[in-house]
Length: 275
Image: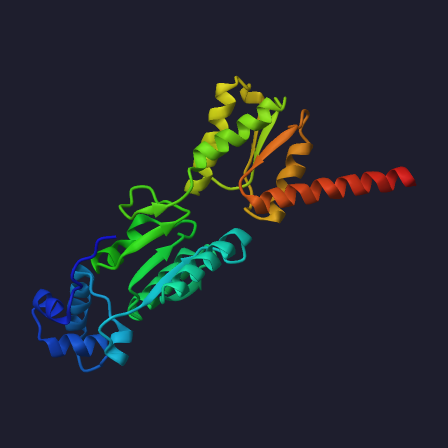
């Protein structure tokens, strides 16, 4: 999380070949600047990685003790618990957490990151939204703001990530099912556009290969990473000619959905027998 000196208005002025006052007027959205000059200044802003620090503009503070926490889905109990845990650590350290939920929306994520940068956060912890590309953080890196990814990695990104060994964990969980005697296995939930999905599915397939589970006995059902998604995955698998006898679920929410669907089927079956 090494940082470097942030770009200044003077850097922009030099890059654009204009005065500092002209740059300031463009930043303030003044209509006194010719359109072609404003375009040139905005390009220079992008090139030097300048971020308008609204907090500094308003308060003129020399140092920020605010850390931005950008969470991909606070409706997911796992990520909500993650956010609460980080918040407790920050508060104990005298750091103010600035929490935002992106709801798995890269556009919303971009807006949140821009706002936090303008408020002058000292650093960012981000659990990237689905569909995020490494380029989404290029401007933040250029500005020298420290960033760490939490729970999710981005391929080809230089930003460090703190995340579990998803592949190894999925492999061990699948091995456990196989050692319990299951030979028709399923992987429920998630989608291929998620790096976490690729890692966990990779671990599932690795275990299947190691124990010579035939490809025909490996059921992979993509779906929403929610209880609803888990219920749908189970219903899809159970209509197969030879349904799986055990499943590895993408996350807890999917697993809860699978259990709810199974419980519903048991209750319905008991109801039919009573009739």
